[in-house]
Amino acid sequence: MPCISVVMPVYNNEKYFPLAVKSILDQDYQDYELIVIDDGSTDNTPYIADELAAHYPCMKVIHQKNMWIYASFNRGIQESNGEYIYIVNSDDRLCPGALSLMAESVEKYHPDVVWTKVIIHSCDQNQQILNYNIGNLDGKVLRDSVYLEKDEVRKAWPYFVKSLLAQNQANLYRRSLMEAHPFRNDVYGADTLFNISIASDVKSAVVLSQAVYEFFIYERADMNASVGKYYTYEHDMFNEIYTELNKLFTEWEIPENEYKGYLTDKRMREITGEIRSLGGGACKLTTEEKLQRIFVHFADETMIKCAIESDREEELESRILSGVREFLLLNPLEEDSKMYFVFELLDSLLKYEKEDMDYQKIENAINHPFNPAHIGHIFYDKLTKR
Picture 1 (cartoon, helix red, strand yellow):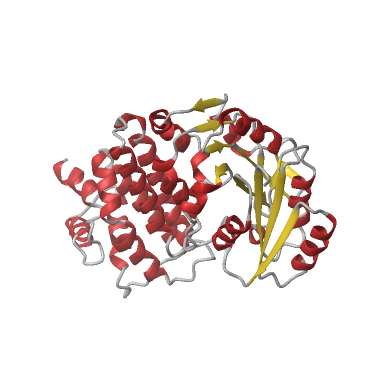
Picture 2 (cartoon, helix red, strand yellow):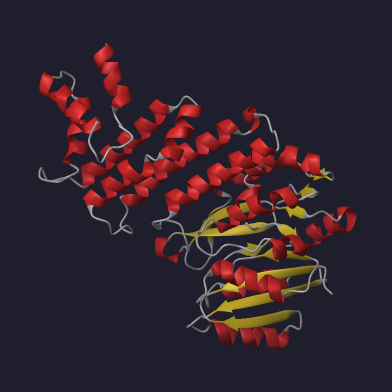
């Protein structure tokens, strides 16, 4: 039985898939198997995979009907034999020596998880790197660390989250953890939710400071699997991640100052990103539908509670109003639109000298049925008190 099973899901990726496979086959560590899950590819990917497997005994290919990426993760886990499992996407790569580095930690500590760093590059269509290590995200982890007791792991979990180690599946997991907690297959953030789901079962962990995984963002937006896309479920997904992490840390009695500010900052940034994604070409909703989604769905109970608990109600309102203003500059509303009150709200708030009619428009907008969170009331209260 191999120590490590590398699982690689692939769908219609004949161009980059062989490069990802090569990054595994070129590893200096040999006690591994490579399980490739062909997720119903319709290009040459299945033939390339079978040809490679015919030449490399350590490689096994499973062909299945198209079921999406996380179902492929689960299938790969089921088909694997290793004590530990590492997942590599078919358009990314493992760094040289990565498996040896992880295996050393396994042999020395036998942890439930080996957290590994991801470095992100932008590249051209030929996967030639244009910008190396974008944002220096690997700088969030500067030294190796070991946690051999459950209490130590729990105390360190906010660090795992803030350092982005627990944001994705690019980590080495004990197979029993992965078997007990299958990946969901309904949201793109299922990797983050997976790490939340295993948290209470993790009794030991190692953090490696040396990056082992290279993630590529392509200069052509249509070549990226998720970057620049619009997902109808994204708001609810972000809310779930925020809520579940708060719940987890509360149950573990982690001091709020170790995680609350970070989670709130993250959720606030996400709401801005959600509004911008509505303005992108990938979202096919009408202007009215987009605005209704912002004021009715985005400004929901979870977001309001997040803002109130952190005394950041004004920031939330500002993010929504500034995002909507940016959106309306490119997507003007007709006066007969049921969402025209949004334009009147912004127009009246931004007027330097306001007349009684402007105050009335603001008040009407705040109390409009399509503004259940009364967005704008904080600035209105400031104006009237002044």
